[in-house]
Image 1 (cartoon, protein in one colour):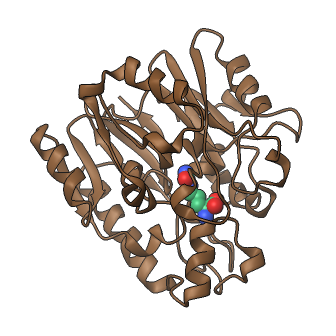
Image 2 (image 1 turned 120 degrees about the horizontal axis):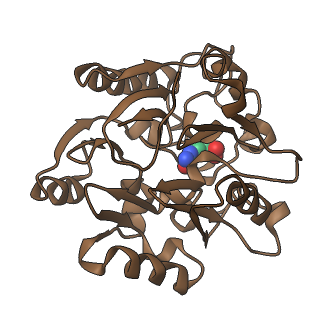
Length: 304
Ligand SMILES: NC(=O)NCCC[C@H](N)C(=O)O
């Protein structure tokens, strides 16, 4: 397989879509690794497997409609494998295995059959365990790579901080010809409305030259301003705290003019349609309860 990913929006040809099959029982609070899951465990509203399977099937059907080749992870019994985005990433023709949260490290073996189809010299793994990064924090934008990180002193105690500056440096070392810009993200284990779990939970490019952004997701105002200068304020769709919580920045592009979005994202979907983007709406509110949405559950392999 010849990989090719240069940005978020070129026409998609092949993708890994996670799976909710055999997702396991409702986790105990101490087993959860994001505040939104904890909120739903406490409230007794943690999503049911059958509902999540149906939601992901709706996404698979959209891919089928657009002739996108879909790979699903092999099933690991009673293990959460929904968020395929984070376990690895593709930049240009290079496959990089993430150094992910230890709770999630088994997920990668379920796509070994996909990795086996890639030329071995194009498959990378970080050389040491103190280099942390997850795919949700890494957004390739042509000759730029945008990376979410967390620079707080409490990084090592912060289970919602998944990419460190060593991770940023590692990605930079792999792509010396790209401009790598890191963003210090706001984290909260207490309140999911204050937690930008990954960069794609508060920012994502869409369409030809637009992006969705949540200003308060950035700890450093200069990082936010960098994106305003980069895209131009008129090209940004600002989402508020509640819209970030429902994961409006985490839609997924099949091309510059076709996007998969959640059917309840009314304001966003109107904005997209006004840009002449076709919005394929799916129900995804159950998956969203685990603090991830459409970008989080997909890992693109080939775009035009
Ligand atoms: N790219 C993403 O933001 N992925 C969502 C991962 C959610 C999952 N509950 C986690 O905390 O790892």
